[in-house]
Image 1 (cartoon, rainbow, N blue to C red):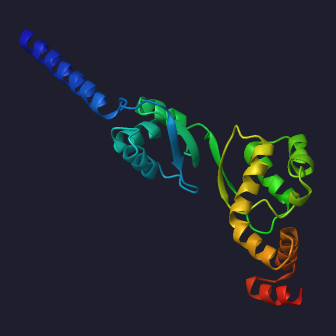
Image 2 (spheres, rainbow, N blue to C red; image 1 turned 90 degrees about the vertical axis):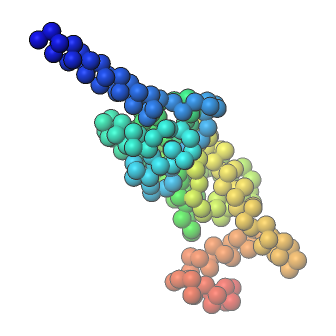
Image 3 (tube, rainbow, N blue to C red; image 1 turned 90 degrees about the horizontal axis):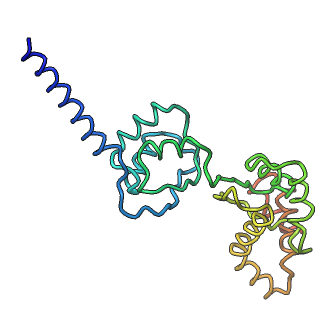
Length: 221
């Protein structure tokens, strides 16, 4: 009987030891460079298995399977966007961070929207008040007469939550200037002001029934 007790204690001790080793190997922080860096979950990606693999590939966790188990135990869903993570975080800490809203959010601006329509998308994404939304329309996007409309480039952006409405407007304009630069040069050679090109392009987009009709409408203009 006495021997059986000791045998039970030994088995329990082995189980605890093996559990501790497994936890150390699978769930503790990888270490190394512990400076926080960005981890981005692509737009539309919510699969924990895919995110776990990306975390492992980027050196944030030691084992993708361990992350999947821990995250499922916590519950909740993963939201695409940008997060600040460190290889000094344990798998539990990373699972907690990824269960929270991201520090950078995806914003998709379709083609052909007026800035009032873009403001609605931004207000929904960043939870702007009606006052902030109206200020973006009447002030943040109207500081330069040439940049009031048609220059808030349609694209997919990853924008920090800390970015101000004015900075977001400047971000869109910077993207527009980058993409429009070749056309601005061509317009200059034909002695056409770039703002006129934007106005004509906006009219073509509004009046044409589809992309196939755009050349016809442009030819008439």
